[in-house]
Length: 113
Image (tube, rainbow, N blue to C red):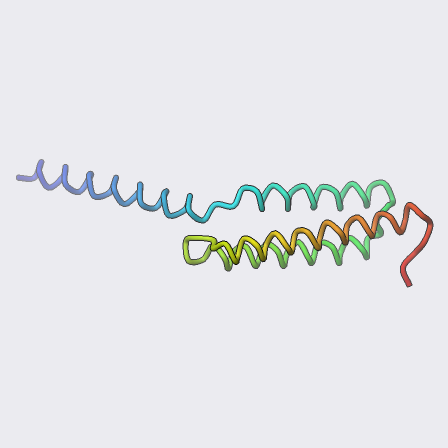
């Protein structure tokens, strides 16, 4: 009887781990994570090259933290809806434009007021 209970407990544990992995996979957003990592690298490169000031970088990184917070809220229920994915994509698109603009100002010799 103990062997049966042990086998049943092992089966239940394996099933719950599979469900947890499936639950996590449903909330995975690798495309969002990749874009965000690329943006952070662009900000760091821009600072290193003198194209982005530290003040601009601080503002841009605040935007990155807001994207990360929004992503975490979206994943909180175990899935990211189409609406949430569109919202995150729009935030990343705005961040791309802001990074480009910050780097362009410095390249062109024009400092924002």
